[in-house]
Length: 138
Image 1 (cartoon, rainbow, N blue to C red):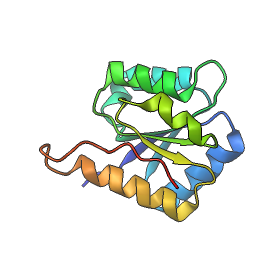
Image 2: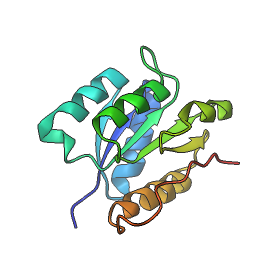
Image 3: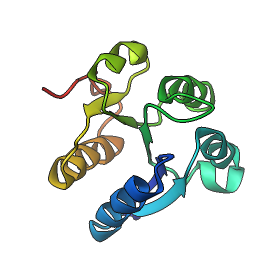
Image 4: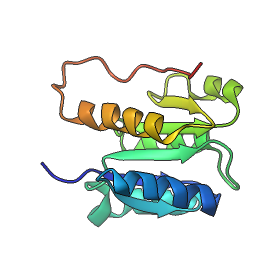
């Protein structure tokens, strides 16, 4: 089994570093981008595209919101798992029909890892299983 690679997108460098550290300490390989435009370039890079198993993104970012970013990802890869983390619970509505997981901040490290494990594990599940359910954290 190969090491899962996560594309982490967050314009807050401190948050990105913290999440990257948490993910790497739990055995994941992490590619970071501080904006959605750069992340899309990485997703379109043929040498990286097949290596990315999961995208974690913030909702509010300069230039392109998380929902715009999710729409762009779906145009490139309709099946790529996406985890959106936002401080705005009401932003969940912007992701309707995009087949993403949505969690609200603050997202504790153990909850982040649990969610990532579930999403990454589903990559190995049979294709006949239901797609990811849209869920907002309580």
